[in-house]
Every structure is written in C-alpha cells, then in structure tokens.
Length: 380
Ligand SMILES: *Cc1c(COP(=O)(O)O)cnc(C)c1O
Image (cartoon, rainbow, N blue to C red):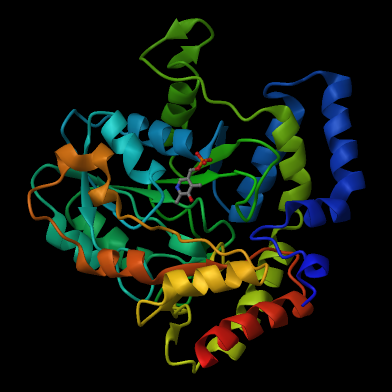
C-alpha cells in the first residue's frame, strides 16, 4: 500500500495552487503594489467576470456565503415572525441566518435521490405567514427551479437560492433553455470559502440578481444601510470582499469550468466502479441539471457507514459525513420545531451518507485506490 505517496486529500488545494501559482502571485502582488485593498479595480473586475460567467445582471460581492444569505434576506423587507421554508438537510448557515433575523425557519424534507427540496414538498409547507423559500442546490446539483418558481409566483413568495455548493451548474427548463444556478430565484447567494468549487484563499461570498431594485437594496444593506456616503437609510451590515481575495478569484474563475469538468470525470470514475455493489447507492444525476460535484456522496445501506469510514481511514483515505445531524434536531433550532416533528428522509440520509474525496486534482491512480478500498470493504 502506497498511501503516503498517493497522499489522498478530501480537497487538495495545495496541489491546485502549484499549477496556478505564478498567475495568482502576480495578481495578488498587484493588489499590494496598488494598495487598493478594499473595493477597487480587482473587486470590480471580478464582479464583472462573474456577471459574464453566470450571465446575470448584477453580482454584489460580500464577505462570505453566510453574509450573502443574511444580506439577501434583509433586503427583502420581511417582518419578524415571517416564515421562510428551508431544507433541514444542509449546512447550518442556510437556516441560521433566518433565525438570526427574527424570521421563522420552516424546515422541510428533501427528495431521497437528489437530496434537494422540491416544489411539492414546499407547497405542502406553505401557510399564510410564508414569505420566502431558500432552496439549496446541495452537493452541486440544481433543485427543480422551474417548478419551484411556479409555486413561488402562485403564492407570491421570494426565492433566495443557496448556491454555495453549485457554482457553474446549469439548470435546464422544459423548453430546452438553461440558466446558471444562483441566477434563477429573486436573489442567489454563493460562498468562496477555500474548499468550494470556486474558492479564494480566505473568506468571500457574493449575491446575484437580475432585478435592479433588489441589487440596489443588496448593495445598500451590505454597506451599512448607506445610500449615499454618510447617509444611512436603514440598519445594515459591513460585508465586503477584499481585493486580495478578488485577485485570487479572478484567476480561479478562469479555471472554474476546467475544475468542474475534472470533478465530473472523477465522479464518472467512481460511478463506473462502484455502481452495482448492492450496499452502495451512487449519486443520482437528475435530468434537468448538470452536476458540479461539490461533493461525491454515496448512501451506504446495511448500517455499515461508520465501519466503512473507519476502514477507509486505516487505508489512508479521508471521507466526510455531510451532514450527520438534521438541522431540526440541533439545539439551536429547538424553539422553532414542533413536538414529535420528524423528517424521515432527512433522518435516513443523515445515517447513510458518506462523501468520498472530491476535488480538481484527483488522478486515476488515487481514484482506483479509493474505489478498490471501498469494494474490498464490502467483499471481505
Ligand atoms: C459553505 C456554505 C455556506 C456558507 O458559506 P461561508 O462562506 O462559509 O459563510 C452556506 N450554505 C451552504 C450550503 C454552504 O455549503
């Protein structure tokens, strides 16, 4: 076993950096030379690049993905106690900001195959107090946005997409046209946390919208509620993307499609070798979305997930459980959750999912080694 040499990482940012090092260093040094550390040309350039890439009218950069969600909800002018529908099978940030703003998170179950919320699940949770929906494109695959937008328009609800895990994903409408995820709802939010598909070397995030009025509100909220310098119309926050991170993102955005293609190739490799093993369910690929594989997530039947994870660890293979506890069972959300509340699919997924190493630098030797280890575990 040459686990040391193979040096398999969950996410290998060091190896990726080595390939873009001269470009990144040049771009970052320009920021230092100019000392335009906040806003300035690098941030503006990145904002324009991302608008072009996503084909969206406005990109508003901010400090991180959690801020993006918070600022988005603040810009909608919701009242205390308004209900916001959100999956329980997601990263905490998605629901946390709802509670933070005095809104009420209404947690719903997900589809067992896509891991995403659906229009019918959402519709069943709508009450007269519902004001918004936050669909999460979990692990890199789009929610069924055409149907979700129909429900939203029927009940006059806002849609804020959590696109932190799906930047670059294409969603296809029934008529064959497509849009990038994050540009379909009223506002899209994303994160540039280092391990995301488009990550910087620190914290970063952005909001996207095609609505001029919402764009103005997002910019105002993210900048101390300021409409004009030193004139503050409402309580806002300070959330900015710094220029050093924008410089890194300028380089990495130009590689995003290539990175996402490599991830998909790794996923194809995993699929080919692991499908057919009766204890493993490989990720379902839905028809109306591409998949950028932020995570490659298996479901392990027979209650053997923990044992498999331990076995892989002994072989030098990292793996992660996203997510081990449904948000509705977390202490922090207790006050929002009715007695005897249960989301059976979320519950089951939290017991069965395991994510294998996934990044842009995985090579065939590593993939082969990982797959052989997974199969060996079940065949012994
Ligand atoms: C990463 C992530 C966030 C938060 O982004 P940060 O930049 O870490 O604040 C929000 N939602 C989802 C689904 C995420 O994966």
